[in-house]
Image (tube, rainbow, N blue to C red; front, side, top):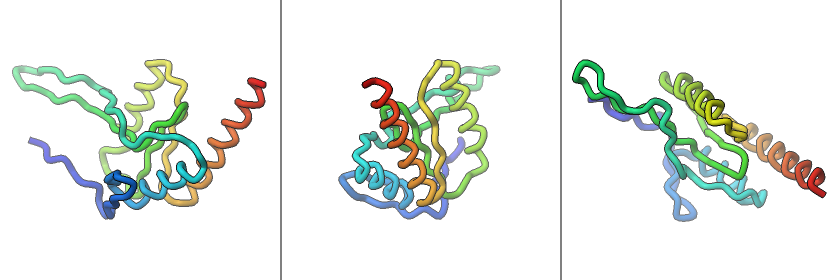
Length: 133
């Protein structure tokens, strides 16, 4: 049996009634709140590869749980990249493409990248509003 690994070197934070797995996730949530951008924290698991059986062995599905989902974007906060993450992230992007998703995916690794992402989302939101006027 494969033991699920914890986020390494991350300090859990409980704030706003949410148990964040890292300070970076909490910072990102606060940045969204301060910018008035609604998001949900870890709202949905995506099944990237369904479970199956191989020669009598039951193989568990490969799933992905993004940190935040907004109206037209998904955010993953990763301070430290684990060995399995690059493959899982690539499979997730493939999943989105196969399902013709219009979500933009962000990978943020520090506060500066979070701040830059927030600016980009606000700018995209404003340009969409201008186009619809």
